[in-house]
Amino acid sequence: MNYKMYDEMMEQPDSLRKTFESELSTMEEVSQLVKKVDKVYLVGCGSSISTCYSVRDALRMSTSMNIEVFSGYEFNYNKFLKKGENSLAIFTSQSGETADTLSSLRRANEYGIHTVSISNEPDSSMIKEAKTPIITRCETETAILGTKTYVTQIACLYQILFAASDYENKYQLLAQLKEIPDIIEELLKTTEEDNKKLAEEFKDEDIFYCLGSGPNFGLSFKLAMTMLMEGAIKHACPLYSAEFRHGLIERAEKDVPIIIFDSDFESDEITRKAIEFSKNLELKTIIYNLSDYADVDKLLSPLVYVVPLEWFVYYLAHFNGEDPGATRHIGKVRY
Image (cartoon, rainbow, N blue to C red; front, side, top):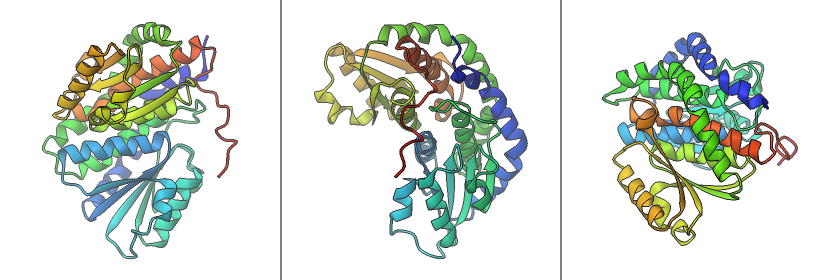
């Protein structure tokens, strides 16, 4: 048993190293541009918008940067843009051809906004049409849920935006970001068995609720939307931890599976209330604690948690007779 996703997971550390070796100088140029604008837009879809959510919330927890996230068509059809505004827009897409995101990039170009694209395909429309292209060096990725393209995209966003920020610990964070390839390499070895057992235990579940605070909400979004739903063919719902008491609290019943991230953020005070409530109601609770995996700045949590989650989803799909990298409808449906 060896699905294509396995190979692409193993390629994550080298993809990160190659991307930073090749693109760091361009990222530094973009950081200088970010310092001069009044607002930054982040635009993406699927796994790509999850990276935008994580970085936005990490920045909002720690900096004064004015940053907004939009999905592709929401950016395109919104009436908030003004010609001549002092802003910069970063567009993220694995393929560089995502119709929603490409449409928004073209609109931003029409408005004179400085456009930056982060994509894995050097000959793609987004790379060709952005004022500043950044190419993630992952070679072709075929597994639908995104592994190496996810970690390279989010790492590029952290590098660009935190380098331009007023975060008091930014130099330590950026130094640790360069250690992430080694951390991922180790986690690929040490987290497989535990998450394989977890996947076997949960293989018959139909729905998972995924909760996180701060940048871990973006990871919860990825876990639910593109890992569990696309990769493992399970129903899933992402929520901010603080939203547990709205809606989910009425569905949180005995034996319902819930996955929760606790990175010891100040806002994880609410996360722990959700954990306590879940245990009292005897939900099937899976808790990921950052301290179990790496000693890094908490804001980097998504880059650490994603590896054990990849193993969990990989084996969850396998135990249900699914290829975690295959698709049934994606690529066939056009809007």
